[in-house]
Amino acid sequence: YQSFTAQKCLDEILNIQPKDSSGGGGETRESVVSRQAAEMLEKLPPDYIPHEVKARLKEMNALAPMNIFLRQEIDRMQRVITVVRSTLQDLQLAIDGTI
Image 1 (tube, one colour):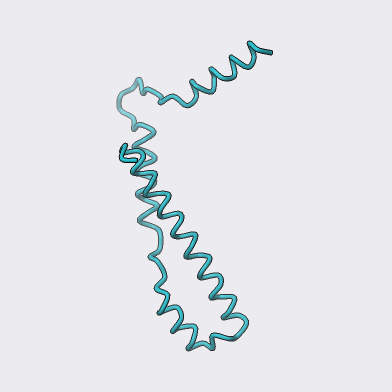
Image 2: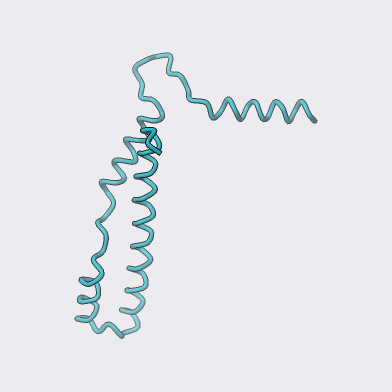
C-alpha cells in the first residue's frame, strides 16, 4: 500500500511539472494558455451599463413578468462576465509571474 501511494504521489508530481519540448519549435504550455486567455478576453462582451439597461427596460414596461425575468438574467450574466474577465486577467498575470 505504501509503495503504491508513494508511486502515485511521484506520478502526480511528474504530471504537474512543465513539459520540455525536445523539438524546440513548439509553443510552451504557458504561451498557449496565455494566448487563449487573451483571445477569450477579446471575445468577452463589454459590461452592461446599468442605467442604460434600466432605461430600456422602462421603455418596455419594466414591471411585466418577462422583463423582470430579463433584468434578473442580465444581472446574473453581468456577474458571470465579471468573474470570467477577472479570472482570465489573473491567469495572464500568474503566467507572467506578477501574482
